[in-house]
Amino acid sequence: MSTSTTKTTAVENRRPTRARAPRRRLLRVVAAAGVLVLVAVASIAFALRVTPERTVHAFGQAVSVGTAPPSWHLRGPGQAVLFGQTIPTQVDFVGPVRPQLTLTDISLNEQVAGLFSPGPRASVAETLGSALATGWRWYFATEIAFVALAAIVLLGAIAGWRRYHGKKTVMVIAGGVLFVEAVNIALIGVTAFTAPGILRDVRSLDALVGQTQIAPVAVQPGPPLAGVQALVLGDSTAAGLGGPPLAHPTAADTACERSSIAFASVLSRVNEWNVDNLACSGATIPDGIIGTQFEGGRTLPPQLGVAKRAPNPEAVIVSVGANDLQWNTLIRLCAAADSCDNRAVTAYLQRRLSTFTRDYLGLLSQLGALPGSPTVVINQYYAPFDPSQDCLASVGLTAEKVDTLLQDLHALNDVLANGAQTFGYQTVQPDFTGHELCTDQSYVQGPADPAPLHPNARGQLVIALADERALLGAP
Image 1 (cartoon, rainbow, N blue to C red):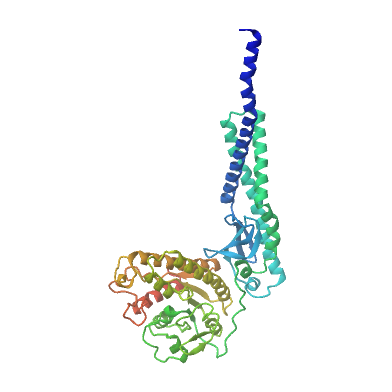
Image 2 (cartoon, rainbow, N blue to C red; image 1 turned 90 degrees about the vertical axis):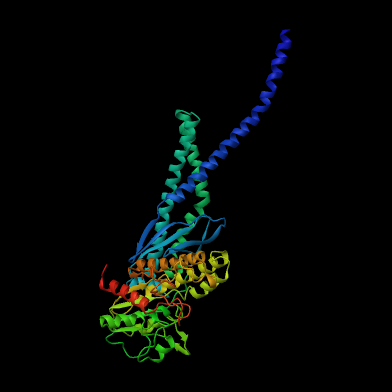
């Protein structure tokens, strides 16, 4: 074979390799870009998950500032975590990553009380907004550091796997970190730089959680409740629905169906306390506790306004939430549905629970302004059902449905307990274990009784004993 033929063959053999070279370089560039994008996504996700919330303080209250889960929308509300419930903020933010603000501790005083009523003083509102803005800046700076840390670890692992050494490793890590941080700032930078200004304009806690500000409940006309040691506010559970009427009932007692077995009456008899039971059947926070209520053919004044006529009570016991959640309606929906955890029932519960949480915030803030600074006790609800009892299956409440209803009740009790803890109030959980509906010596009224699922005389006694232990400081 001649020399020219050999050279020609060699050139032809090299042509495919040269033709493939640009494609290989393009594939390497695409692969490198893909790896950088994955590193950026992983680093940002890691940082958003592990960056600790920043707790800020303003006038005796504590709010933790963090981030809500990312959204596909470029503008919308952040999140407020109130008493364990996540609800959208009333204020909107720009960007896919928005602040999450958790109310963790509230100590009421004259200045903080202004944050729950219309027109808080400018200095108080500015301090709240400035504290939230500072907390967000700190959170964002910390998030940047965690993104860089995660990117360094991931890029270092890739460089080691590729067996890079020395200068090349440094260049890969440095360049990769710059790229990752650029993506990070591009995604959340808009929120990071605009959120402080928005938070600085937050004028009250009510505005933060999306609640319409409620003016303080006025003292209701009438003679002072002199000598009253304890007050009971609440719904039919506290009124003692289904029991015998009081010996000398007032018109309000009759309209509200207050009975002689109510735990307020038990506390009064057993301890010789002067207890005024203001609870009313059907009462909710907006319609009964802090607002007027139409019941039994009468328009009744706000329970909280009547309570303010007591000049120096030692204790206030509150039992509220079931009517706000429309518990009876929830039970009927559950009984009629194929399943109690379907989307419709779940959505209904969440809407009611979110509304109650906001209303509960307003109530708790006003309880702290009662004359004499009484001890506040928040009663949680007893569990009326036992899934092992099948006596309700005939009305559509199977064991599985009862389990779901108990979970719903647990969610309400969590809000009640977390709210009490946030404000530094006491909370009580009456224990009906072993004495639920259909059991021997049940603490609950049955289907044939005047007020099904409400406590009977034994149940009211158990609630009274639980409240007594809380008030006397017993374990």
